[in-house]
Image 1 (cartoon, rainbow, N blue to C red):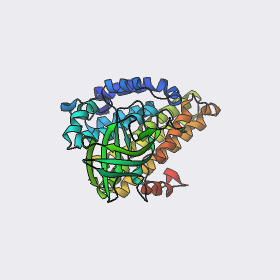
Image 2: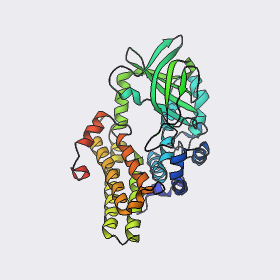
Image 3: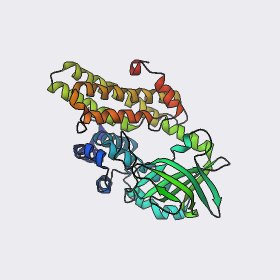
Image 4: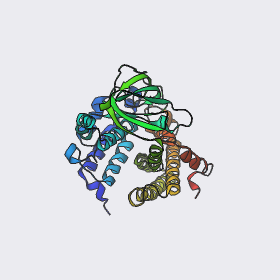
Length: 361
C-alpha cells in the first residue's frame, strides 16, 4: 500500500534533495557546511515546512514534516543537524508575545529566509547555573559559557536561554554573530558532526535588550516541557535506519551475502515497528503521559541504529574505515544519537538494555 506521506510534493522534493546531499556528505562533514547548501534546503520549503502559511510557511501536517526530517537525516547528517537547530527559533517567533521580536523575525524565520541556531543544553545540567541572566533596566545581562552552538557563521538568529538566580528561564533571540560581551571560538574538533560549524561561546555581561526577550518563565515549567521533548524519538534516527537498512540489503545482494540481506530486512522491519509506536505516542497520547513507554521506544530505536550501522561496517569490511565510505559515517552518526538531547532518564533506559541491546524487552 502506498504511504500517503510519500505522495506529498514536499516529501518528493526532500527525497530528491536527500539523494543529492548524500553525494558529497563526506566532503561537507570534513570541510564544513556552507550557507548556500542550507539555502537550497530553504528554497524548497524544507527548513520549516510546518510553519503557518500567513507567516511564509507551508503549513504541512506533522507526519509529512517528520518524513522530511527522516529523508534529510538519511541523506546528510551534517545538513540535517544544522537544519534541526531552526526549530527552537521557529518556536520562539510563533509563541512569543513580544511584538517587536516577532515583527523583526517571524516572517523571516518561518519562510527560511533567516536560519536559527540554539543554545539551551546547559539548562539540563545539575548544579549552579552555567549561564546566568541578571536584570538590567528593561533587559538582561547574561554571563556564562556555552559549550557548543551549532551553525555559527551560517545562521542568522540565536535562540539563547539563561537562568536567573531565583529559578526562572530567560529565553532570548539575538543575532547569531559576535557582539559586545559575546565571543565565539573556531569550529570545535568533533568526531562526528564536525562539519556543522559548532563553536563554543563565551558570554561576559552581554546585554540583551527588551525587544530581544522571547519570554521569562519558571524553570520548573521549562524542565517539564523539555522532558516531554526528550522522551520522544527523533525522526532523524528512523531516517538513518531507513538509509542503512537499504544499503545493507543492496550490499548483501552485491556480495551474495544472504545473512546481510536478511539482517537489512530485519532492521527495516523493526525500525518500522518502533516508528509506528513512536509516532503513535506523539500523535495520540497526551504529552505528559506514557513517559516510560516513550523512553523505552527511544532507547530501543537508538540501540537499533547502533546495531544496524555496526552490521553495515562489518558487511562492508576494511574499506568501511575510509573517510569517503558512508559506513563509518553512519556508524558515527548512530553514536551521536546516543548522546543527542540526552537526559539522565534517557541514559538510564539505554544502559538498562545493555549488554542485551535491542533484543531485550
